[in-house]
Amino acid sequence: MNQHDDNLEPQDRREEAEGYEDIGALLKRLRGRVSLREVTRRTGVSASYLSQIERGVSQPGANVVRKLAELYNVDAQELLKRAGHGPQPGPYTDEAMDVERAYRFVLDDPAFRVGTRPDGPMTVNAKRFIVEMYEKFTGKRLLE
Image 1 (cartoon, rainbow, N blue to C red):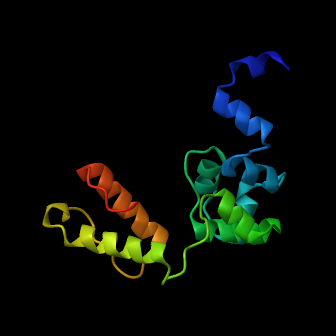
Image 2: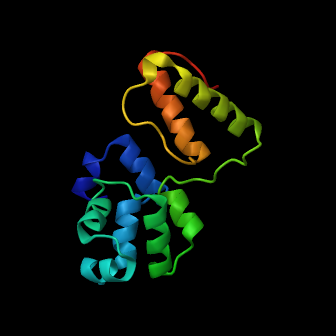
């Protein structure tokens, strides 16, 4: 163990022991010696955004992850999972129905009509996120 290992927090040690690599570090490693400009040219994703992702300042969206997976020739589903874009529950599962019910409750709450309103279709995970923020804001529990 080198002297820097003594400075690791317990979470860092667990991640190191499990071979965990955050999405930014993983993408940087996959990029290798290819320049950010070249990745930008091939994917259409700006070099500044790619740099923010690799440094852990930003989390990549699912579309960006898919583009990078294709470019780096890695499994898109695995990369999406590593980036926190897990599988979506089916539209008619109990979980999806619970999230939809809670999401409708949030949209109907007159006290929560500030900011931008969602426009267009949203994934179950996006709706769950909005419900969870509502729960934190109001202290109400809508999801189990």
